Image 1 (cartoon, helix red, strand yellow):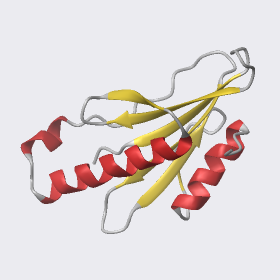
Image 2 (image 1 turned 90 degrees about the horizontal axis):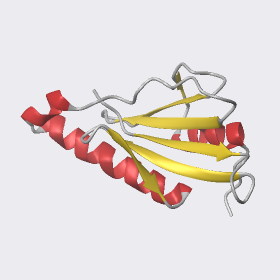
Image 3 (image 1 turned 135 degrees about the horizontal axis):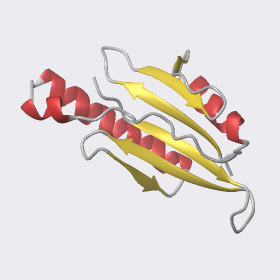
Length: 125
């Protein structure tokens, strides 16, 4: 099953320094979509997860054309972290980051979000 995700990237060289970008992986269009804030990104990710769950329950033929989150790109020293959710009977969360590139299952949504925020040094305002 394809899973939506939320990615936080920290840009050291941006203006201002330490700027963060939030992106949501949309398996339906196979692309990352920008999100204004962490909360906006989480809301969008969960909305997509529910939409995908309904596609599977209703046996929508479009479910076979969904794209899973792409493998991380090897790049410079950009710091990023990502959380994804699997739409099952119970939501299952996983995380990965610039230094741990394999998906690791989290205990809960809150622990997954805490993990990705800590990885990039993001503190919610």
